[in-house]
Length: 589
Image (cartoon, rainbow, N blue to C red):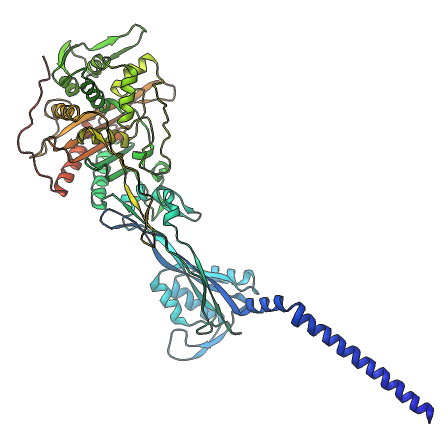
């Protein structure tokens, strides 16, 4: 009996020990789950049901002077799914009757609604069947997005994103630049990316076991912030006119490229900066000329030719070294002690020309004879004050040449002579425009610019350019030079250009030789015209340039485009016509 009781007690003890051991295991596991691994398990559980969504801050618009959008952001939608949730379901699939819907049927309906590719959808789903994310189709507009939503496929999700559009297309593509998959790529988009870029925010929402978003579960974890609006001085209508004008002329001249600028003489604001060919930012891949990705008017350097002579003439008058009626004897050519020589574009007998006649006939020999009354340093200093030899200080644009020439001319004696008729020195089309803006504005240079500033989302204006005016020559010197330039139109190298009815125009032509790789000059030319109107009180400055024209290599070939564009400017802005005929200085003595 005693033995039996002892055996029972033993079995009871063993059972109790086993039970206690089992309970201890459960307790340890429970503590491990609820205490030790609690945070990790909560996080994992949250990740299974809480879905993060990026909320995109819209990129700011680029607008013209009248608020017309040159670049803007629109909402597009990426359609995504969670491959592990892709299965048949019961639904209306855009109809009115609930039915069984297979995966193939659902994907077929999705392709029809979105315009997507069925093969791509299937490949993306099959790539990782247990994942929570895969793209089905990207970049849907509102119409296609609404068609997809109407299908009510439970495992299909729409994610909004911001896309870039350019309403004016290629007309202003050279100015705006464009966006790429890696962000801003060119133009103002690149230069002002910091201000234009929006700041993305985030939201989370919860979904049930069936993958459907739970109503009212969306929580904003970070607010999105839109980018600023970049305000430019460009007039998009005038930009279109300039673009069409030089495109038509360049094709007739069989030129390699062309540029045009229109400047408000009183403010230094660029109203148009046109290039041909140019890029369409809505279809960058369609541009075969890689040089068209930017603006040649801003970034490309060339020898300006005779358009520089107006600056030398103004400097001579400003220093009291010459006057419009000051005469000199001008042979066809000059030879210098160091062995160098120069000559005029066309042979002529020795002439007695005034400074006015030298500009009218565009005499290389004549401008150097009078120009040597200034030292090389003086000529250099004036050119620099006119805006040459350094980047445009008020323009922020990628690819602008450095052109840091220093404080004194680093040229030999021959280049010192040649520089007076625009050979051996480099300029951009904008720098030539700056010379003529200065002359048109009574000798006061205002840095050329085409950005007013960037207005941030909270209304603050930043990135406004510094456009501090600087006097270059006296008002009298500028006025006299403008007066002389009327002779170029009335009886000089532009006398074949049809007059602009009712307006006195002052202008100068330029024919620059193109340097070859061997270091010399070949047969190619860059032809240009720079001018202003009305001459008695200039309001606007227009420049046109054509690189390597084939049907006409004389500057007169650029005249029709100049006349057309200047006429459009005067008409568009309703400029008061000239009150009287131009009073011209004598060209000979």
